[in-house]
Length: 512
Image (cartoon, helix red, strand yellow):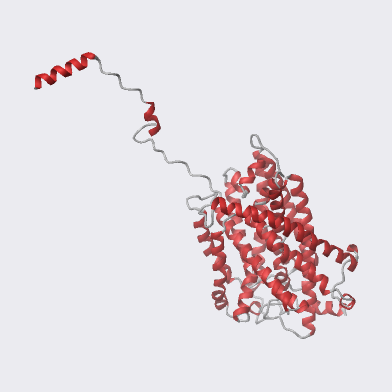
């Protein structure tokens, strides 16, 4: 039965033909192979395993690349490296679980002759089909909230980065501008159409990561550098949850798989993407922390400490473009949910769907203005939302879906032998649930919320320019050189002599 199910998925058609997972607006009506259609296929229509790898790697290492040195200053060098490796493996494992549950759900639906040519499967629908509506509701709530704040973080990062090459406008004003720019993602139909964007996004973050590493090493350690982390438990768990957030970018796994021509090939893709991401995050974070040490505790964006050069400006611009791409990645599943809610998901008019999607951007725009705390907001989202969305819920869902012997026997995918088959899988899943619930959600939630509230108390909501340098006091020296304070330093006037009084008295008597 498992073999038959795999054969059913393997029958999905190759590029250029209509497959069960293809979105209808992307389908070709004819078999013509004009130059225009070939160029469109090369740049626009993606569904291969390579496209999925680029999507996963590009989406995973977005703006968080700039906050990892900040996390290292909270954790210390050794803990920062170990947490990256640990959460990288854990994230790859839960992404694997999500992919298995997707294939299981899709196979069952295809046996029932379900047609997905004009429908994108999403995570909450997988939970609904396998475990029922209560799981669907919980998954929908967590997934949508996480993706909402994930989009907010990208918008905040855009304003934070552009400020370092153009500070004539404050960060809030830049948020207004980039909110309007990111709203254009409503015109990207689905994850099929991110082929060139995913490739460019990964190139951009690769450049930025190695710029951070090389520039920090060439800059050298600042005078009196200190590496005192970890010093406080609050800071320690705040940094740990930011790394949990870093490797929890697989909330869009189901949508990426659905865009593939052969989704059963996804199983190891996320692990390979994570391996590449670690070659970017470890050298960059370690180098910046080595160079600047505790200064990072008050500079959550690593770019703010490096001197302005054409290379830094290039990194800022490239990260801005990449954050636009990642904004689309986080928002596209929200667009799908909204389309299904208002009944436009099967509409073939791209313009109608784009117009219907615009209301999704408004709350994201608003929240980015209310909470512009670049860095601390990552940890808060990681502990409260990522912990459940992509770690606890997938692990629990996998355990419950295959809790019976019959379900395990007829599973579409059997667990690999090197993890101990079903017994080993259950042990790993139980460990993930307990660890993330206690360390990620418990301690991490306490630390992140404490730090987040501290930011609100310090800067306030709707702050105009978060962590901006204090502007210099205007020169008040005119018309007194050196300022008004120097008036007290002027020499005293000489006392009048007796002759002066006598002359003044005679002059006055003569006038009388």
